[in-house]
Image 1 (tube, rainbow, N blue to C red):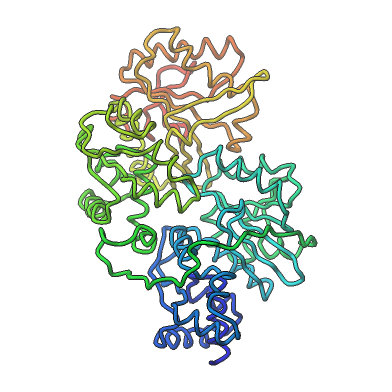
Image 2 (cartoon, rainbow, N blue to C red):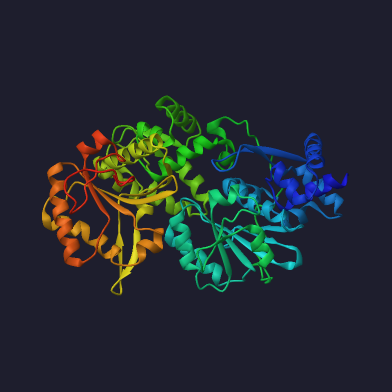
Length: 547
């Protein structure tokens, strides 16, 4: 066996599902030598590949050892195949785990490859159930843990995971990857006093960054450093947790059939079979259950026929249904919920209890099994109105060359804070961040139908008065988000402006409040001159441009 062949087999034993570029970066071989070895190993039946792509990583082929490759590597190392299956993540059980997490695997490998470009050689270790997703050992014994927070990860569950991280063996440093700015800031606050050095980056920035791009943020100051600077300044070796070897499922992995018909493909293979746009559609319906096809097309930025094609493809995989409930809205199946939960290391049972739409032929909200999904369907008119606003906002933003950095559903839009010693919260209908020409504009959305009396209006505003009387808006977002309140009728909007001004004067707490109503929004658009502010007359202005 040629040296490069043996090294690639050994690399895939430690890091299954690398692509060609990552293999070259981690092995240290030239691109030409590595690229010539890969088809040679494929033709010999020692490695095979699966397709993969996400919105953050381009479509590629990811390689793994076959049963014959495991035997050949064991023979080259003068050991038995059972030793490789026990000591490396190449068994049937490990392959299933990594395929289920394939989107996260791709992100972690990109970061590991960048590390190898700054310090070579590196050693890599996957974890199944530890707080860290993976760990990298650098030359000199320095250790770096990698933690990824997935889009569907809930705040409480991830906080427990970070607590476990700080109460076990500590690596020299931890790289934490967050899906958005709000959750990155939360993780920074949680680990502010942790005994381990921690650095933070947005997932979309970490995946695309070179080793010299300053995308990793320090926890104590508002500064960012490059991965090369992180590694160069490390002086602590640290210790890595040791995970017990698998006692079940340590058998040779079966062949992967990527050409199985959609409905016949095993669930763990779906992350490899779905296209990036199909995954994007899944994530959107996961965020906004009971979303209509027209609103999905607007959020994706595609035509309605194209959105229908995507949904048909997902239906063929058994991951999406168009339910008769509430006008044939879109809902994820339990199979799709399980796929997203395993990708983000979330309990599958908990995700189904909260979000399941089964039975999918339900005629009314009472028969839906998921607790939160049932609640959204119960108030279908309000849910539809919020979806319509978010979809219109996405469309209007594109027409104004605005970037939509973030659009969060109610479950992620809530904020919790302390006020006079007690825990308080705000529960908006959505949260978003828009960006245009370097200007960042965060906002909360409240779609209001029931606040028709002054007392009720004051009660609706009270949580925001408490929130904006504290320092938490700046801590959570780096700015004071606007609070957009939409009423069905212009008369209710006018009364709310008066009540809001009185309450802000009474409490001496200014809230960046903007009020509108359905008719004005339909005429001007969410980013048009459709918003009124307390105490500034009745001339509508645009919220983003401030005009």
